[in-house]
Each structure stands twice: as structure tokens, then as C-alpha cells.
Length: 200
Length: 200
Image (cartoon, rainbow over all chains, first blue to last red; front, side, top):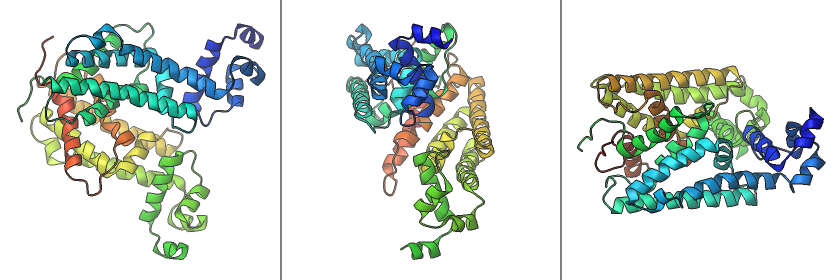
């Protein structure tokens, strides 16, 4: 089994193992020895693929960040009224979280102790800022409630969306439930849970 | 300074130090030696106050749990339409999170490795269930959107509320901003961010 594993090893397989171990033990708490044991290959075999654990972290969080930033370039995110675009971006962000769950989980947990972690946090802030800008544009169009502070709304929106990494577990084959989840997040955040709006 | 500290030491002071260290290092990663260093008193002095670190954990999470469960007994949580009661409980839960931030942070981070942690998680689930029951009652009254799954809505609501422990930092003296925060959570969750409800 170990021999077969070694033969079949690809950088992607190694990355998947590393992401799992980072999420279980924390990035700081993971040594090359832990990765070697979890992957079932020697440390020197790992060094054949990557320079070290920081490169694995960079690749993993890049995958999450690339997927998130790609959403912002999709037609639904760049055309139409700002409020439609922010709803689109919210829905697609939830979909990215579900599709790239281990990578986004890792991204949301980095603490800033290394250069790669600080870079990842900076990119995350950039993404949050782009979403905040969209919310501001929708507010300027008069499409968002005037009594809600946009910076606070941005944090609460991400708080709700990012909470998925704590409780969402993929269904085999995805499907109906996952579609409903993304739609529910959008409906809750933008239309609220109540059947009818209440006056102040 | 150390002498003065030792004389002035109370179980409450020790509890505050323990909560801070548990939140910084994680409960599993905290030893009695860490607590002794952070508190500036000897381990034997700590054992004079408590049986061990698990007792400190139990006291700390009990404080958070007692404050949360107390909300459910307040008049606003037991009288009136279910939708008004759930809005009240949401607002007060946010206020408890702000008032008891370190204790609730610790409660939300326990992992279930000890009996006390498993007990805390079980109590948290009980609280979540009470809130889910209120949401179900409001849905049965026809006051919540029929197209939103209640179990999912409960998770998203807690996701948004609990995200406060990640980014909320108290203002000296509290005041306006804190009031606005609790109100914004309620408005976002129940009325949504949009100015007017959108048809399907």
C-alpha cells in the first residue's frame, strides 16, 4: 500500500493531505514529520515536490483566494444594479465555500505568523473590501436600508457566510440541498426571515 | 507587585486570567504552569482556589451559559408573538455576547475532549434548540418566510451572531455603537438588507 501510494503521489495528492492536516492540527502545530506520517511518504519525498510546509500553505490558500476573486470577474458580478451584483457575489461566495471547503477553512484560520499567512490575510481583506464597496454602491442606489451601517453589514454578512466552514458538510453528489443553502443565505441577508417588512 | 497581587487574589481574578489564557492558547494547550505564570501566583496558590484547570473552565463557560439561558426567561422572551420573542432573544443574545465576550468566546471554542467540554457543548446545543423551537413557532404563525428551511436559518442566524467573537471589540463605556450592533443584527436577520422586499 505504501509502495503504491509512493508511486502514485502527485503534488495535488500531497496538497490535499497537507490541507487536511493543517486544518486538524493548525498550521503552526504541523511539522514536516506530521505531513510525512499523514501522507505515508518520507520527508525527502515531500521535499522533492515542495520547498517546505509554507509552500503547501501558499498553494492551498491560493486555490481558495483564486476561486473567490474569480467570482468578482464573472458577468453577474460586473453587470447590472449593484444590489443584484452583491446578491450574485454572496450566492457564488457560498458556492465557492462549499466547493473548496477545506481550502477556504484553512484560509479563514490563518493567524499571521509567517509571510505567507500575512499575505493571505491581506488578500482576504482585499476581497472583503471589494464586497464592502459593492454594498456601498447598492446603498448609494437607495437599494439598501439606510439605517444599517455598511461596514457592520459587511462583517455580519461574512460572519454568516463564513460560519459555513464550522457546520457545513458536503452531501455526496451535492444537489438540491446545496442549491437551497446558497439561496437561503441570499434571501436571509437581503430580504430577511420575516414574511413582511415591519415599519420602524 | 507580585506580593500585592497575591494578597489581592480572588477566585474571580483568577478566573479572568484563566479565560484570557484559555482563549489565547486554547484550553488543551494550557497547563497549570501557564496559568501560574500568567496569574503571577504559584501553582499551589491556584490549587488553594480550585481543584484544577477543568474547574476553571466549568466556571467560565457556566457564566456564559447562565447569561444565555437567563435571556430565555426574560419577559420579552416568553410573552407575545413568537416572531417578536425570537427577535428579542436575538437582540439579547448579541448583548450577552458583547457583555461576556471572553466567556462566550471560550464557550464557542470548546472541542469536547473533556467531560466539562462535552457538558458545555451539550448545553450550547440545548440553547440552540430552544432558539430553533422559537423560529419554528414563528414559522407556524406564518410570520417567517415559508421558503426558508428553519434548521438552516437557525444555523445561519447563530453563524452571524457568533461571528461577533471574531471581530467585535468592546468600546470603552459601550453606548451608541453597541446598541446599533444588536439592532443591526436583528434588522438584517429579520427584515434583510434590501429597502423593499423582492418577489420571487
